[in-house]
Amino acid sequence: MTTTLTHRLDRTIVIGAPPAAVFKYFTDSARWAAWWGAGSTIDARPGGRVFIKYPGGNEASGEVVDLDPPSRIVFTYGYNSGTPIGPGESRVTIELEKVAQGTKLRLTHALTDAAVREEHVQGWRYQLSLFANIVANEIHAKAVDVVDAWFDAWNETDAAARASRLAAIASPEVRMHDRFSCVDGVDDLTPHIGAAQHFMPGFRLQRSGTLRQCQGVVLADWTASGPDGQARATGTNVFTLAPDGRIDAVTGFWN
Image 1 (cartoon, rainbow, N blue to C red):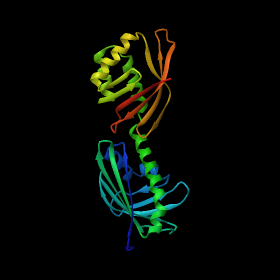
Image 2: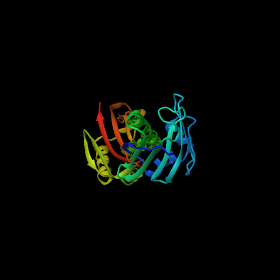
Image 3: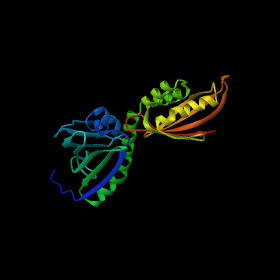
Image 4: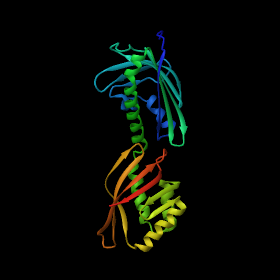
């Protein structure tokens, strides 16, 4: 690539997943295609071909310039049609940094001129948003199991078993807030659940309906049934999931 790249497009996002999980989408063609579009491929080695087939039919290509798993990939990029730039006539650098929320992704797209840069601003805004969702969907593929285990813990009458169940699915500092809860940490949550069972004996909590999930935030409707099996209360819990898939926080809303 001999073209002088005098203009830069910079974008930074945070993805709720570990860097190694994010980086897989730059080295595995199936994951690369999940991000860009069916038929897209990447040969993840210096000099390897980068090919993107957009859902609308446009195609772009380039080659890998540099690869440093799981923190950095550099590749050239351009459109096979030659407009607004030809194959390999720009350079994309993506760097990953581990942060408390997961991974900070920094993208720099070096281009030929200001007009071409402006044509790509919304494209990258959209593409990285799509990317964040696809990674989160994989990281939290078992969210339904985690949520169901949470409700099961509220039905567990043995304190030691309850603590063990919570430790398997929730962060040690998990926060639980609702109309009757303002507790932080498994050590506080375990006896809090026990108290709820003491004052509402025989009540059972369970998920109702399908989960709704977006980038580590999960909505789950629930039903609380009395000893006779009849529904006594309903509501919705908002779960915040950590990059490792465990529950960081729960906010409960009663109907």
